Image (spheres, rainbow, N blue to C red):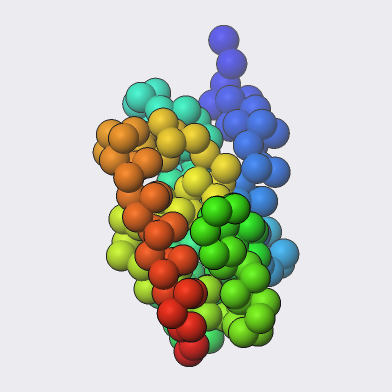
Length: 173
């Protein structure tokens, strides 16, 4: 029988790098991402007894990481509003539609996209972050948020559409 420490060490080995990369995409600061990852795993060990197994372990950890990140943002606001969205622009761009990345590069406003995502309603922002930053499937995203998979797809589509419309309209901070 394995000890709690052995189980925790296995969870860390298996999910630490993926969690770090998720947080790095959120904050775009390697040192902060490292600190937040450590805080996330500390919180994970404290709350592991609440993990019911209804979702993937990474989904559970990503949820803790997201809450750890937002707690940090609230505590340090407005000094740090650091969502990196260069990847988001790549992923939300439709080949048939106006390319948000091209619009941002033309306007020189990467900060505008960052602000736009931060201003999305919480449920939109959460779906975008799980899908893009944590590279979670719609199924995993739905479980993390307690919604149906179809709802996750609809919310992601609406968030993408909202961001694209804002960028087409020349959103400038």
